[in-house]
Image 1 (cartoon, each protein chain N blue to C red):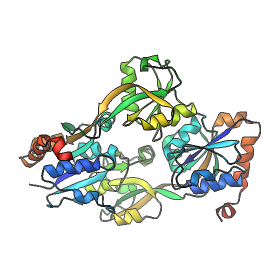
Image 2 (image 1 turned 120 degrees about the vertical axis):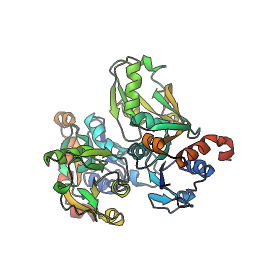
Image 3 (image 1 turned 180 degrees about the vertical axis):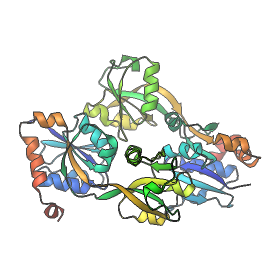
Image 4 (image 1 turned 30 degrees about the horizontal axis):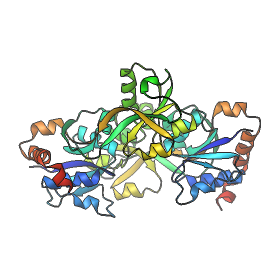
Length: 218
Length: 218
């Protein structure tokens, strides 16, 4: 069996991602060690390795087959639109992709927004698809961060952004008025690698799928 | 005179950006205070404010007129392709946008790369323009970070990335073989705001342009 490579997202999903692979027999806990600067980390057993990359890059490495498996949020998958197989809903990392506006604006649903208004987002593809489906033409502004500044500065009427606790919205006088979708972490795979797999890859997927989330999280 | 808003990039350019505006009479030193979580920070005199945003978002706020002035790297301006006026080359934040390959690859110039090879970059627009000009068709792969993993994992033959000291390349067994351009921080402005300005905006630009970089940096 050749080396299995797994793309893991740095940040909020990392700890739970490592736990799920541990339940499947692959120990990537070295990536969690403070002071780890390596981007490519071997598993304890040596028969697999993890690529530590940015959220948005996980589906890229999996789509190009440089990683056979990966863990990333559904939000990123929706935005990336890359040819990867969604294998398991891992349940953790829950958040909503929401339309938010100024609390004082009076808009209560996305359909209340004026046609051709501006909407700022890090997720402009998802936002575009949503407003197209709503048949509401909007001007999308792509931002790299701090999307809440859009309505605060008056640059945009609304934003489309991830909402976890809602605290950032509240602190900035914004309110979520409609959800595009709910997002959780997903186990994804390279379709060709899965088709050519003679067992070991599917065994990992099966063990991750079978692991009781409540147990794994404990 | 109405409130002047300045978009400043978080990160490496921030300290020098604040120094330049101080030389022009606008004290934004509050943005440098550790523990500052505000995204919108008033100047000490109260007649201006700074928007603290990601590098890539500086030209967006200036292009939409939410900020009349901004400071951002030439690299970001090249990539953003937004309608902003480049006013002053501030000299700091110097780095090169370079093509890099594995040191063991044997490629010595960009033109040595095989046609239709893969090139990974955070700056795919700049990379695309460069290879088009070179008349070399390449497949661009957009990454959000750690671009050096492209050649390391075998996903791409080359990368196009910012090089400051060259340490990251060296640590990853890569070598820069050709520069697309040299980048420094630029003072940019909203064209319409500059045209409608009755004096104060131009006064700031003039004072920043006149300030001796060596003196300001001291």
